[in-house]
Image (spheres, rainbow, N blue to C red):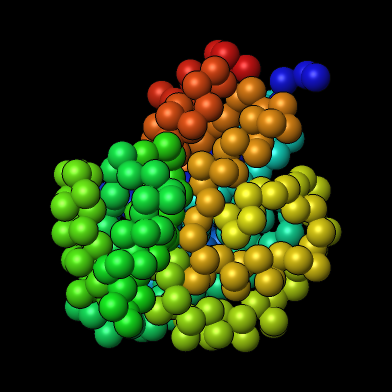
Length: 311
């Protein structure tokens, strides 16, 4: 089987001030994407990406379109400058929208407006301070499910991200998440810690956001897919445009099956993963999941030159 390439796209948490600026200053194709986002949203998202503060970028309703826009700007430069082509696509949570734009399923302007709404809905689904998330390190899936069951006591707490072996994130009501940390520590899992997030993503508390997002997605046109996208909700490659909306709605309350998605792509013959967009979070996770694959990321001129030299 010939070696296949996957483009993977980052999610929330990968943002940083100045992201995308270098490529937008250098390449018209990147600059056009930021301009298209500004037009679609009716405000200067580009200014927030290029010169906004960390706090501005941290607001969920801004973070989501900002990361999507930066990722697609990077993608356009990669396509134009390197000749690299993907066989499979995937994205972590929000990053699945970037993957769907890359696949041709979603028009960029529709995607950027949709994730702006998605961020707003997720933020508004749970009153601030009532939900949270925690990283549970070195805990396996079965032990974690027992911990969550014991800690729930009538409140929501469940796995939210299966990021890599030994790195699972849980989400839910503040009391239940704190109890889960205590139960984990009592069982000898000392590395359990709250995450600095504004809402409990990917758990049942997000149901109001999923319902509102469903109504928005119903009005968005989904096009034929040129490449399969490995979906977060089931870790399977999907090339059927009629499944896209439901997979995106399911994703809001379901755990992100990232470890399972990378394993599935490796089994399909993917031997090279290229992270397209801000940061190197996914590159680090892929390294821990599939040890013998080639990994690169592209986010600026230096990393672009590096992949151009190796492609």
